[in-house]
Length: 466
Image 1: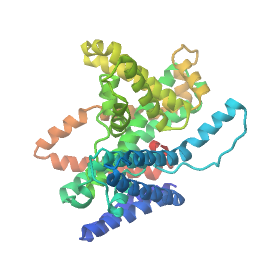
Image 2 (image 1 turned 135 degrees about the horizontal axis):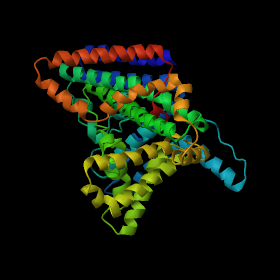
Image 3 (image 1 turned 60 degrees about the horizontal axis):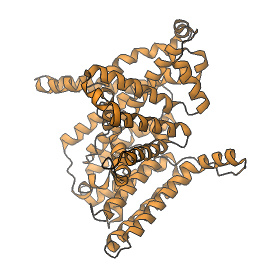
């Protein structure tokens, strides 16, 4: 598995880039990207390539049908049919087992479902297809009549399996009219390397602490569990933000401009601000396709509460077919409602450092709900985190010295999660030797990432399982 991931990181992109820039014609370049994207997906799970192609075909036909019949009045029926088809596929593969397990517990039955592995990236490409269908219905874009172009949009490999969630309107013009340049290529390569370093150098080391402590939480006291919660907080950020940056960088190398997915969320001054900065493409997707159609905030207080709860329960459930994800979504629904209805004005008057600290406390606690999937274990972990314990943190750290030594990586994690480096980067570019220093830093990051990958075991991106 490690060898496979090394191939795709260090062999697949360079070979594809070389072939891509040798081919002069735009159509042939699109064909090459489509073929490479399907190969990339098939490498992880060959049999599910047919599921994705079926999804593309169905949405291709629905898109054309909706555009042709919108004025005839049957467009809404086709839209609903398209949404049902997309959600049915997602529901069967991702949620069927969850519902059957809970029905069996509730009614004491013994219904079984096939134990099918979750198709990689199905949540992401299904949401991209849904946004395309809805935007065609809303007349925000025209239906794509070139099957190759729609395939390229949905299956484009950089963002296919873990986002960002790219809407068709984001790259519609770039499918046939994008502009490749040396500057774009270098900028994309730089972003790819920075994203790789975030994953390999920070996220993977934070994962060692989080996995070790949460895996044997009964041996840990409150302080050690909070350290693990902080470790997971940085792990999931640098894991997912690192992948998003790699995807954006790869897209830029081929002339595509994918939307930003993270904007220093751990510098947020409120929970509302956090969700404007974290997984931006997902939160904006639910805002535009669920929250606003329900009525948004321009409604009565009762309906506002309903809209937020529905949106966030769905957001939590999107992340996984387990009750802890539903609880995580409800947790954020309650926090956001309190901000909107009660504490928002108070938070705005407090010093920025205080609001950041308060927001981070709730965010870190929320990541525990996200990390511990078993409800019984989750309750036990939260109880231990918020009650005094006789277990010595010093003794635990001494007994797990090899694991806890990774705590050194909290330093670069904190620095890199704040806009400090962004400010330094701007000043560096203004300096005459800025380019040389930047090049040296990028080479060092790449070399360190390669060394860490070679020395470590396989450690996939967290969001691959969503």
